[in-house]
Length: 268
Ligand code: DGL
Picture 1 (tube, rainbow, N blue to C red):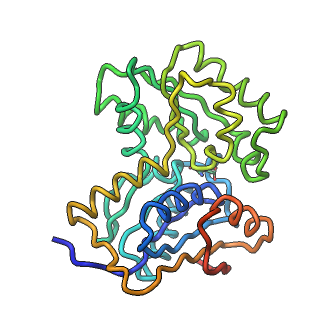
Picture 2: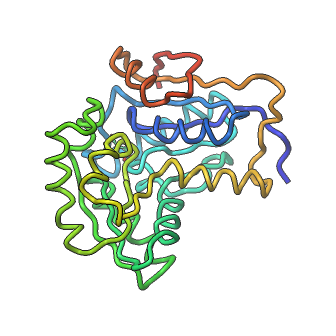
């Protein structure tokens, strides 16, 4: 049985995408403190090789471990697709693939599931394998969307250019009559308006933040992860590996109404 634990939860992504997960976690767990790491100096991960993605992810984990976090959420599907361990040096690691796959199967009636992700995530087949493990009859139709990350980093949701690119990427999936679409990259919820405009309301969107929040909630209720006693006000600290005013502005916009207590640049 886990004891109350006031240490922060570490969260990392290559850039701003993981902030969509941090926001969800911060809203769901108002007593928990969070330490977020955006590896902005080495973004994007999605076009890199499996061994490089794994090496960067391990470095991020080791860095967060040194900050004395109680668990780490890999708020990056690309990193999650290459690093599937549930613990690292005794530290619990939460990866977004399993919760997203499970959630997609829960909401899909036809079990025809679409997946959008980076090239690395799609090539890894991590979602397809996990979904088939849970339900061998399910069918997964995947599509790599390499142009989405820069559009999300620019904050171009609902922009005509984005709408056109979304239409081009999604058309083959919609022709396969999917009823559920996994936003298999934490940057993609930033483009949710453009995506849902193309899918229409008959396709359910699954995003990593909501899915992982449910898993953490379950683990805290079942005492596998110590919850914060909430004696002191919680803190949300954001660290990046490169300084950028653009990141800070985008972070404040994405996190709203959640407020970060501090931003700083770190060396891994
Ligand atoms: N946000 C990351 C993900 O969830 C990928 C962004 C990148 O390519 O760095 O896959």
